[in-house]
Image (cartoon, rainbow, N blue to C red):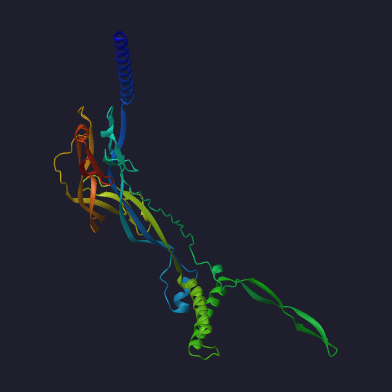
Length: 386
């Protein structure tokens, strides 16, 4: 019986040892499976400024009878030749945070992956280390394109006037013979036909119509005509105004206006160095940046304040210790200038003009730290224990 018990005990011990061996083998295999190196890429942000420029384009078109305006109407036209004028109505400046190609990094780890559990924004900005899911606010900006069509008209088009009739009635001489009281008599029987008006005819007709309209309008206002007051009179006077304006454009010319919008993205790179946004000319609008005859509009960053004033640490992982890179951003003035004239100034956070610091990954893993960052700035938000 004792021998039997000893055999049973040995069998149990053997099974236990085998179980421990199998578990150790599985555990070693599991450890082997999760020891694969993992690399996570991330970047730090920089700020660019989106300038939305709203302009007004004006086309001045002379009238075909401008040389007769002073003689026939007693006025001198201001528009004597076709020309274009541009003016800037407003410049809107908004910060846009974008990936900085000069500050992109990779972080590798194997075995314990917790220190490289990075939280990233949709743009790839660093938002947290071992911090778990961090709520992100994603905003899509609306982009609106407004087509611009240049007015190619060089002179007021007479045929575009609603009151213009290009034809005139002409009576051709024609005679017929009829017997009247027994006597054959020659009788004038004109033939009516229509022909295109000459420029002189059109000009004379326009002058007469202008003065006729003014006379009729005066009589209406003075209540000399049997026109009821109220809406009917308002409609008639408005139509007279339109007709007179049409005819006057033949002598005074006209202008057309159109709103044009352009956008530019500008990234400050150094303190005190202007960054050209665009060049503008009153006769051409937005021109090429190489056109030095046009006025330059630029952004300048100045009066910078950086909490960490030492030289920026190396951006390469030179040491074998893995690190997390983050920014200590600069805060400064952004100045909009036209040539050398200051137009606008505002305070802004400028990440790329700050410095880059590092946080060792082994400290995060060993101490159980959790890091949170401001994704737009790349700066450290909090360091806390998990």
